[in-house]
Length: 323
Image 1 (spheres, rainbow, N blue to C red):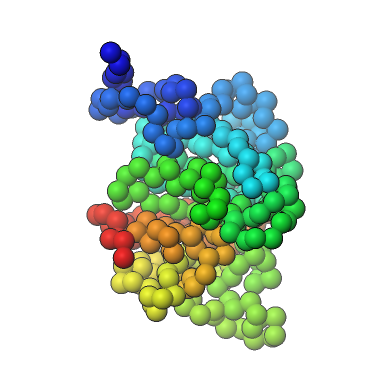
Image 2: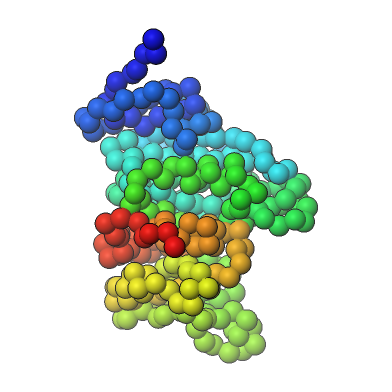
């Protein structure tokens, strides 16, 4: 006879089904691990303290920083690249938002994700490139759907049907019908960095104009009034325009002082926003992009403003129906 294990609601932290009790008292029946639990192992307090990771070590002197949060890791190889993912789970509310930080060199994005995790619940999944906190993962193989062999891979260009281990390591965590995925990024300043509301090609020609489908905020505060800080939702080019729900979200965020861009996607560049727009347009997805600052708290505070506005104004009672 197969024995069934009945426990309080749990956050499972490894493929061997170890569990940690949350504050929720709803009983559930566990017969086997869910997809998102496979291959993950818990990082003990002792291991966390010893980790040579700058994001972890920034809070080494605060013994309460990780209270209520468990940390797990997953290591795997795919298409010539070795990946190390870290997962941070809010024990009291693990089934809320999935937070995503793909770039290990964007420290303020990590700070913003953990702050959002504490406030709003859910799980934060981040890419750990190693002690050097590199933007790109070193290796030798295919990155995302590209056929070329390369010696480094941007994690946010690696979402593809030909990278199922990597892609599913994130998307398998989405277990609730109305569970959004929110990605956090930081950008260099002045349209010369990673990303901007400005048309960068025109900027390099000496012209200053907004990129296509970009919308400036109404009366942004000093904190938010720069073109490197914006919210983003992607849409499929074949749909010709963003759907009404995304437009309403943009209008609400603009009214809340947040710049916004509807990213038009014809062919995926391997980013999560592109992949979901083309393959899973039913999933709620939002990018919070903040200008990089020497003071991480400033960039993280911008993330907090965008996240709060999105969760207040852009959530739905259920997923969009798949076309």
